[in-house]
Image (cartoon, rainbow, N blue to C red; front, top):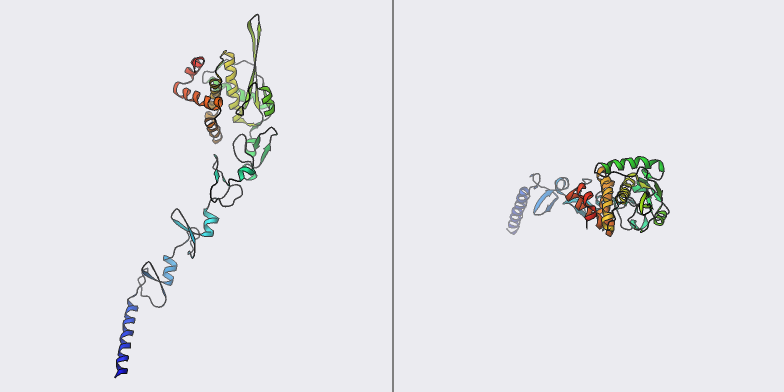
Amino acid sequence: MLQSKLYLLLHCLFIMISSLSAQLKCDYCNLEISGKYLTTAGKSYHDNCYTDHIQARCQYCKKPIDGPYNVHEDKSYHEDCYIDHIVPKCDICRLPLKGSYITDFWGTAFHEHHSEEFPECSSCGRLISDELTGGGYDLGDGRNLCGICNETSVSDDYLIESALNQVKRLLASNGINDFPKHIPISIVDKTELKQKSTSYSDAMQGFTDHNTQTRNGEVILKESHIYILSHLPMLMFKAVLAHELLHIYLFEQDLNLRPDIREGFCNLGSELVYESDNSQYSKFRLQSMLESLDPDYGIGYRKMSKLLYQKGWMYILEELDNIR
């Protein structure tokens, strides 16, 4: 009797288990589950359904993710895929950029320590390296020139005349004329520029030496000689030349202005050159001028540039002697 009851109980339990097994279905394919299965977030899946359709996958290699992973912009990646393919790389050493790093005006990203390893180009601000600029040069006067800027650098006199004519036309289109027919222009290094200038500033890229000859108290001759740093890229050379030509304009007009007004006005010539070009390099140079803390070449320039924007060239030229 006892054996019959035990047999009946076991038979009922088997039926219940079979029934429960028959009711368990995969939450992906909706087919019955028999054998091994996986449960996650309260749902059950066949092994292959979970692996092929539910398990998280790396957004780069598309393979299933097992173990630790990285999330970037709501997307999951294997740790190796994330480091090798998603994390931005240093444009100099190509190693991953982790933590803080520098991104310059040109969109170049690099580790902070590289700024101590490589010199900066005096013209464009790039770090001089084979990877970024194709190398560069030490000019021997405290300046460094990158390979990119060297491609258009002015170091020979034969390029001067063409640049002078272009700049004169640009100034003339804004009402600035009557320059002397003959204006000597010499290309010098930084050491020579310091020696030629009466009051040197690190912001200086050129200098104009003026000479006045008088007889019996009357002016009989005015002469000006422009000196410009060597190895400036052509666009920067023209901008410096425009600045120095405005110094000659002031000299010819007998306008003796306050230093910040004088240099600020002359920097409007450089602004003209850069704005007429509209390249990334010209934008970099304009930004450098706008960010300069020099009281004359920076602050003075911003004051005059604002006045030019508000009033125009005619007002500036007519009221120069009255601007304070």
